[in-house]
Length: 244
Ligand code: BV8
Image (cartoon, rainbow, N blue to C red; front, top):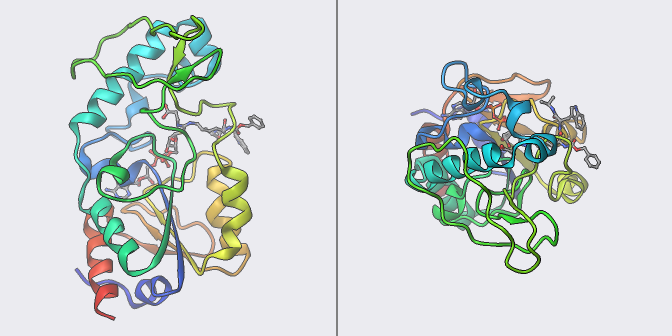
């Protein structure tokens, strides 16, 4: 695969910030949220499941959905894009921030500076906040599963994700540090969710190049759009960078 010169030039810079979204995990077989045909949420009404209100209204339905998603992630493997980012971090000063709640970056060997929208593997007590490791059920979706109780305080264990209306993790730190980077690489996100969607445009306004890796680019103002996928584009890019 030929990597556009503009992408190689921008990505040869010093400090690299990589911001990933659901498209990063698409080639691992995990549905994205707004992908036209297989969008995860096309089968569910988002407001029914990913908000504190939904959780308080029907914790068993919400817990069952997240447990199913945890089982799907556990059965998936990091793709060549995840592996390429781990390789890139060996030859450059690279920081990964993700909107994803899966653990595929970590399982590919990457460190993730921030899971802006939390993690499926970070369940915690809804009352005292104690973190608990929960084992996902089998792969078959189970519509309703009563969430476990907290052994410390008896509260309800909730998914460790950030719901709509909740504050993303580390967003102030990420927004405050954008100017420290020489390039921002946005992989697999539609830019539909805020405030995470403000990170890359903030880089553009600060004169920092933004490269977008996406088969259906958002073509946001100032982005260098590279119409490819994470698992095809990133390995080809890292191969070129490793030879420079
Ligand atoms: C908050 C966890 C306030 C749960 C998720 C302006 C400013 C601030 C807030 C708002 C605002 N406007 C509206 C809001 C509210 C809201 C929001 O953004 N709503 C949207 C729908 C308009 N935001 C919030 O509520 C946020 N919180 O603002 O709190 C606050 C203030 C003070 C104090 C307290 C609170 C919290 C948002 C977090 C929601 N949680 N996830 C869960 O997973 O169940 S969001 C969810 O969407 C995922 O995290 C996902 O990552 C994220 C974004 O989606 P994408 O990753 O972009 O995925 P998508 O499917 O959209 O796109 C996939 C892309 O990949 C596509 O472009 C596709 O072309 C591409 N692709 C496909 N295949 C590939 C590929 N790319 C590469 N390779 C491939 N193979």
